[in-house]
Length: 114
Image (cartoon, rainbow, N blue to C red; front, side, top):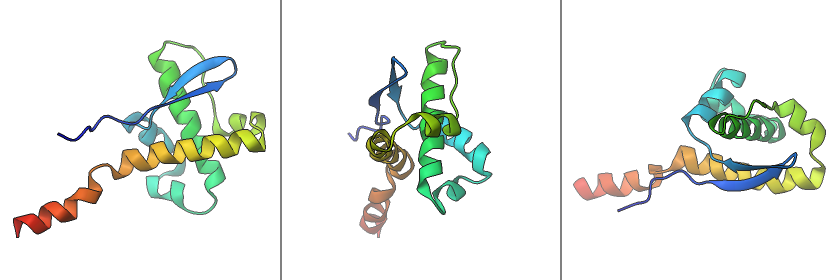
C-alpha cells in the first residue's frame, strides 16, 4: 500500500522549531493571496516561496496554539540569501509533493484498464 501521508520537514526560525507541511489549509491560504493557486507558480518564484513558507509556518503555529503569525514579506526581510536558498528547495519539495501525489500513477492505472 502506498504511503499517502504528507511529507514534512523540520525548520528552525526565530528560536522556534517548526514542522513544515503543505496541506489543504496551506494551499487555501496561498490561493487567497493569489486569487488562483496556479498564479502562485507564474512569474518570479521568490515571492511564492516566501508566501508558501509563511502559510506552512502559520499552520503549524496554529496547531501548537502559538499566538504568532508570519507573512511572506516579513520572512523576506529576515532571511538571508543563503537561508532563502536552503528553505526554497525544502518548500518547493513539500509543495510539489502535496499537489502531485498520485498524479504520476494515474496514466499507468488507466492503461492497465484498457
